[in-house]
Image 1 (cartoon, protein in one colour):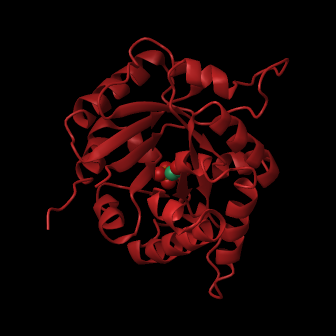
Image 2 (cartoon, helix red, strand yellow):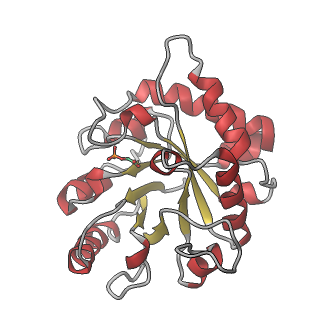
Length: 255
Ligand code: PGA
């Protein structure tokens, strides 16, 4: 059985290297001892290759974005090959906060191709702005998946993870997280969409994560009943004790 994948998305925090280092060390201490969870910490780019951020058993580092350009004069950008050569294994692509800054499915598709070419594992974020009662959000998600994965081969899809993040459930302004039942339905739909494009076998092997107001009190219910194989955690990953509780909820029940 595969491990649960618990991804911390630190976004634009913590503010100082010292605090970032302490947070990473605290998370690592807990994460190395958990046999059922693979932890990925997506720090701001600045910290990715800094001292004090050494990866170890069960703990990897990820970036929060990547350029679609292979090389050349692109001020402010970081290429997929740069990440790879700094031993970064994962990259989040298409987070709703980047989409809100103008990132289109087309740009996301190019980033996905470029990351896969550099042999990174992609955490592709999809999710609706609103959950309408008629279920139109399903076709919105289907479209996001179709467009974002347009250039991905059947071979490379093995290095893609889908993070289902309903935008209405993310961040300070969110009223609440999704329910495990709601996520289960959407995760099944996502898998069906992936199967139509990449075949059933590939689709079944792909991890799907839930993200959006994950907390210690709901983490286990998503893993147990949400049809997902992991979590993408924002705010709650910025406090060692809170994130440690989430990590500890990633336990495979022996039945
Ligand atoms: P949140 O963010 O956990 O703070 O809601 C999740 C995310 O944006 O990945």
